[in-house]
Image: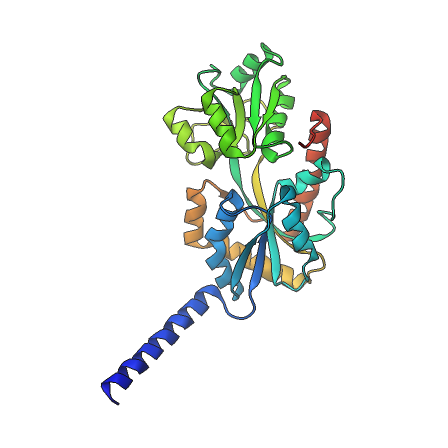
Length: 324
């Protein structure tokens, strides 16, 4: 074998070896399409992309992520609903999936009947925060007293009308028996900017979005909105610990598939999701993003959807939430 032929043979062998390594890492065969009803760079998008390679390995198939944002998640979810129930299309939905039936007059699908729940994978913690220059309160009871002394004179911010951040704020208002005006923003970024600037006194935010501002002192955390404390702020109690047991909300995310997915496929995808989020690299990424991972069974996911939809329906009606 001449040196040039030897080099070419070596290069082909190396290419085949690299190709095999990629195939093992990312899976072979027909790709699995993962539809996200949110934009690129959002919290759910970041979570799914962190688990993409591990999910492909667990499924033994390539995984292709497709962002289809719009209409509060309805656009992307409708695409999941319309897909063939063959195991090659799944999606990841979040709280708005359970909120939308209550805030939209009509829906193009039934969020429970027209999907197959696979697993509620986990949640991103929400925290109740205040502007420390506007609000002297350092805990939930002090904030309650501050707001009760100023009925209708304070403002709370949200990332938009009818969003889960809005409803989380309404949840505290209802539990605390206070009156505070809702100021909706077009996204978390503008909302946090005005919170820091003092245009609004308080609000609810996903922890990763305000972590740096809490450390700098630009914002003060009053409590965790969920059922457990978070590792990065171990000294910060939940609102339930502070006397508001009915305040329990976080930014959950769940894997779903089209309705009619065969039971064997449900179990196959469920096992792959559990394995992917148990991968050491994925677990480390979730910890960095402050996400709490606890995958449920398909049956538990179905019951969770029903409970969440009913809970938000009551809150939307009580708070008279209306879309822009």
